[in-house]
Length: 463
Image (cartoon, rainbow, N blue to C red; front, side, top):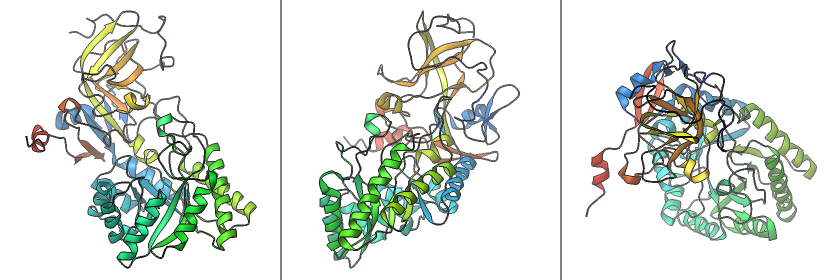
């Protein structure tokens, strides 16, 4: 099909159906630096590049779909967070966003700590050489085996998530002659401005021990009495993809009030406070994330002010950015297969991936951007929906976006800001092969997580 052969869906100037989109950009060839990693650019003929390499070359070498991770950008973001908080605070990268052995090595080299929330993530961290004392272990239902492995490895902290876990960790540590450093995760009753499924600090959810009703205070009492535990602080996490600092202010105030109550009852000032992560990134041009130095300044001022009011020494602050570091550093590259206009509605642009490599649109109604990546185009904007190849009507990658009206089979399109949770949550739905993660830096590209093969799929099928 030629690039002008198919009838288009609504174009700029038409009456457009209701949707998530805003007005089309004046120039579809322009790449908004807010949503792309810092080494992404276009050549004179419009081909997108990352780390100095054209995506057409990357597609030929590594195939599509594939995640391309800008290593220089990842490292720069690690340094920005470390510099913003300085030596008197701790930055733990939240491994759930995306974890691989290469990423662990980068974190270690750039001076960040690592937060894990499963035995598998812990194995990856240790295997790649992250010192155990720089690892924090999260999770609302850690198995006995996971706790044993964490204690024996000597992780720097275990975040306790329930009354049962307080006893479980204490018993395992004491049986091994250890005194395990722990924090207690509390739910502070703050519902962040985020999707219902990723808000994590209101009482009606599975994480943490509630401040309400004195439960958190009772958890502190029990932890302080057990010889196998060294209680070092309180942990709070209020949600994900948050832009407004007001929720952190309320959370910090309530956590500091708990610290003051602990001092008054036990004569102990706990030395640490972890405010979690959840800071938002730009998925579209409408998003306006804060820079790390702004976040560090705001959180430090909030905690200092509340501690001064309570007559407490200011504790050491920890934060856990995951998405905020890795999210903007990667994009997913797809090849267009079918272009299907629906008169008066939109044009469906089908690509060779979908919900198996990015479930977030279907799961969270997440919004993404998209760009024609293999060439420039002077065609007018066309309202499009980028969809995958899976047998689900909800298999949507980008719900509403504008692409050039001449987009055609064989074109490459790129979806930015897919570094967080896309590969981590990828699946084999419809027996799809999970894409590779390719690190790109200074004109060189290398696979850090290889593409799955049909042999990989069949290897576990023993029937």
